[in-house]
Image (tube, helix red, strand yellow):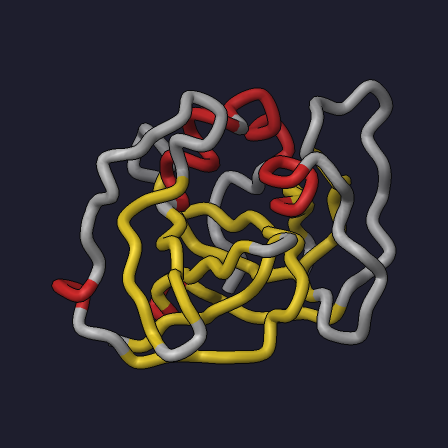
Length: 155
């Protein structure tokens, strides 16, 4: 299976490429007054407003840097009602993919209530890769941000 690999601080993270709708350059985002920590803002994508969550802010406590490799990863997920939705994840070093057997990812036995969206891990020649579980990120950790999601994925 193909995974998109990116960085948040010293951490390498991955998403299944099949979950990625598009990888966009860092865009000017509309801010949300009094937004929760990690809510970077939103932008208009093909007529629908899409929220963007700053993974760097959520995981490391520091906003994503303004680098050429900083990207918005547009991901597809289903909400608790089964409706297909889009959300953006802001991350750094969004430049690589890796092919791994899903069985290569295994649980570490170490969890934290602050990052329930970090799933199993795998290793490669560069070190550990944490798998992101989009539903846990978007439905548990960032539920208060979901009011900004479009009701359906734009065509």
